[in-house]
Image (tube, rainbow, N blue to C red; front, side, top):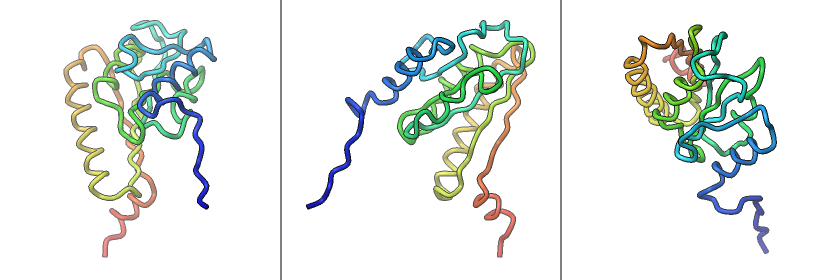
Length: 164
């Protein structure tokens, strides 16, 4: 007889939304952006739109390993975390909303992770997704200084540097 795994979720379609709601209710230093649940962004509650006097640090990714990114939002850590659906990159609109919400005159650092162990086609799709994001950022560059840190996982780096 095979054992069935149990999960502590109510509805698989609502798992990301319910996680963010629970996190914000538990930690008063966090809030989610207007547009939630379509825009799944957790930000520091003490950061005032446009008045942040430090470089904002934004990261995120697909949900499924909570509290993956939103768990790192707080003083001295991330200013905002952008979540996609389970195992899916966040939509460009959500990333742009996070940039607009927490970036002040000092600009922001956007940390983009590209795990290459998932296969070349997935990496290509993520880089195309990043290209759409950059095009969206270009439209608001007059307001924001945005720096993008692209983190490639070791298998990806070795795949490109050790060709046979």
